Image 1 (cartoon, one colour):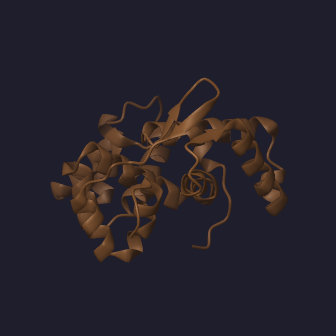
Image 2: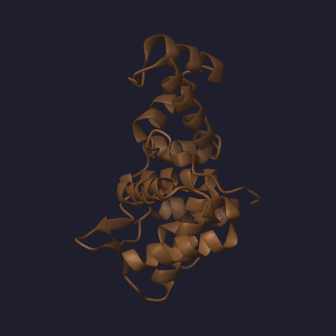
Length: 203
């Protein structure tokens, strides 16, 4: 997956957009097009944003997430278990941002595979230092931007209940996706990342 690094996810403190995505999926099921949903959301301020521009930006990000899924994954988001929804929402988020995806694999998945059960502040610092060595773009981000990236990134994992915050570190907790979702991923290996980031066993 060729994708440049971006800190765009810190704009508006981006998160999993659980409510917004479910509203968009509901409207799609009612037969509305993305254009019609956009017009309705802007006209009625469905997502309670403070400005027209904030609505425009939010809708663009929500549609980008929804476009990561096929019809069946959209159904899981609407009707699946809370764990299934968490895993699929996190999956879409990671697909949109290379930096978040690499944190998942290089820190969370890696530590879990090594039998470690906590992400420490040192793990996060080491990850940022590696990325700075690999990418002039990340190296040139301001300290304030990097701090915001840490905050928003960790917030997404906490919201997905994959990381549980403690006083000084974060407990790694597998997302217990359903057997039905596991079976679907096995049949559709293009979604393998979803299984891998859920940390729920071999595939």
